[in-house]
Length: 365
Image (spheres, rainbow, N blue to C red):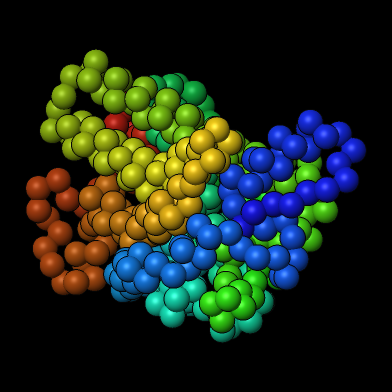
């Protein structure tokens, strides 16, 4: 995958943009062009393809049953629907969306990058795949802001009268933002025939007609990396670092210790699942810009890490939320009066995603 650009009106600007686009290995040509050797070698690497397939199989086997059950508990067994629960529901929906399309990715990887389901299904799978990653990032950021306000700014959190409405609007806006950013993927045939290997790829080679101008390509890449990853990442880190500092300053009780551990865990999941792919993408761009080398295989492997979050979230819900844990035990017919899990009134409901469990503010929504 490489770029071949001619007839630029502004040679220096377009040369720079062309180099950036080359760094992400997009094909700026038609299907008749010969792919570079590094790309062909990636398609021939069966060991890496099978390894990613196995990872996707494990994720799918955990994702679908765990998130389906979690969604049922959150939707029909948990009340009231606080802002925290609304964000959990949104996160579960994004996880299920990628779980539904992962089997197609498994078949594609295990057959040596040979896509047989047609252009339409390729676009659907690709959009769902990236929607999960970026919607999860934005949802985790919204969760971190929600908790930051309740713990670090409890008075402002108390004064907010429309937290549930804010949560619903936030979920709608983040889906709208992500789908708009990924709009080019929805309108383009993302399949690409490689005669040399007798395979048809899906989203591993992008074509010129996906976006009409170089400026739009640059804006597309800027939106994905800066708007949908880097900015939310900084906000999330700031919020959780502030929360951890606040808890330590207030002194550690049993409840706060558990909450502190969960703050570290949620931040760790965010960093492990989403950061490698986006950082390696940036490193890959630098490699192509200054050293004429590639990290594309590492980028492909790191991309699979973003799916791991989709099967970890239900376990985080169990550890994080008393409501979720108590409802799960009730459904399974287990005791619900273990330490820390006594039935609670609405004014004492606890969730790791709700700052009320970590601050002196006990006002519920």
